[in-house]
Amino acid sequence: MKYTSTLLVLALVFSLGTGTVLWDQSDIEAEETTPERRPNLIDVDLRGQLDASQRLNQLNERRANIEADLEARAQRQDTFEANAEARAEARVETRTQQQEDRAENQAQRQDNRAQNQEEREAKRAERSAQRAERLAEFKANREEKMAERRAKIEERYTLRQENRERFSEKAQARISTVTQNLNNNYSNHLNSAEGLYARVESRITEMANNGYDTDEAENLLAQARTALDAAADASIEAQTSSEVVLDADEAKELWSEAKSSYQEAKESLSEVKESLREVVEELKSLRAEGSVELTQE
View 1 (tube, rainbow, N blue to C red):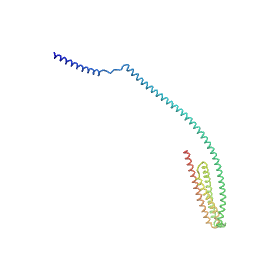
View 2 (cartoon, rainbow, N blue to C red):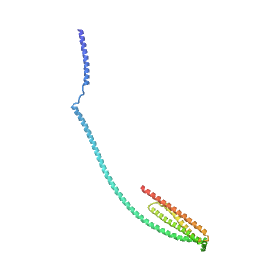
View 3 (spheres, helix red, strand yellow):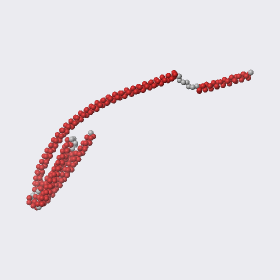
View 4 (cartoon, one colour):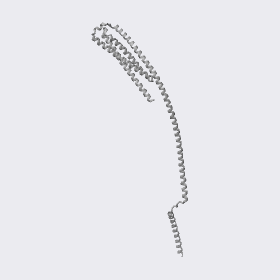
């Protein structure tokens, strides 16, 4: 009987332990095999409302951004139109002012041109008068200087008509032809130099009237004038000596003086040409500098 009770107790304990284990395992398996709970209609509705609210907020925010952009663009457009109108008015005003200034400057230039033309005409007439006076004075001085030169020759040499008899007619003709050709050549050279001097002088005056600094050119022109006067004096002495060389007792010595005077006149004419060439170069330089200044302005 006691043994039987013991067996029953053991069997009860074993059954309880086994049942607990099986229960635990069944719970685990149930937990592992239980599917996830599907959302019900309430969950779906709440989630949909939340998503719709977020989308609505996003749409409202986007709409606000678009409206702000449109407003800013409208402001920029208004500002641009206002600035464009102001710029157009400023351009019209500037163009009008420029046209008025241009017309005024044109009128001023025409007045200045007319005034300068009058001044140039007056100075041209004055230069022509001075040139004619200087030429008349030169001719008068030439006759006077030739008379003085002849008097000096007569003081130094005995001039006799019979001295020509020392030379044959052919020799006299040859000497007369040579001296006449020399005198004509030097006279032509002097006249040519005088004409060139007058043209250069006229150009200097014109450039001075136009505002150029012609001081250096005028100094060079003064040197040319001095050399030209020296050439004229030497030519007069040579011409006077050559005209009476046949009448002198010492014709050879007088002819040497004449040749010396011709050489002096030749050197003076070369100096005149060189001085006038330097004047022309100076005027070209002034014109070039004036063109550069106008281009930069």
